[in-house]
Length: 235
Image 1 (tube, one colour):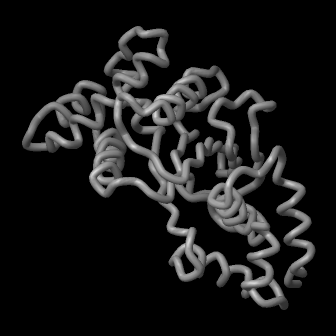
Image 2 (cartoon, rainbow, N blue to C red):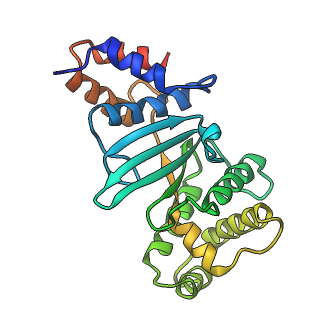
């Protein structure tokens, strides 16, 4: 049976705690709520969504804007999300430092499973060069079989561009500060970059691709106009 529009809206309000943040954060929350309601899959984890927690600092997470719990054949996995509408990847950017400090803190906790759990920076606006760099850094970490192999890939010009190496050094600098100003080992850099991903959502505008897809999901599950349900979810 399709869920009624007011049922979806009530569920969204029940999941949202705290002040709700800006429109972008609420819209991202709405997309994940829809995934939960339709038994959909989580981005990054690519597993069925089982539970969503918003503003999860009280649960012990530093990356606390959104925590997604998903299920797999051997148990569960978590996706810890920090949502920032726009961001600059530079050593002097305090917000970027804040994101990576929170991510490092969670990565180092005993209950973070480095084999299956992930940490995501969710943004709307970020420079294309930064998108390419962050994705490449993660992809090379996934492809490498060891920390030594990974660092070789990053350091060698034939594998990694100067612009990407610069972003990698920014991340290293941020993690060093987060690690009480102690250098992070190559092993931990490799494992951290395997766990950390960038997710870009185009959802600000009425005709954005992600927004249209979200409204399409609503249309499949509700007898009410998708635009009306969407507005109720994000207001």
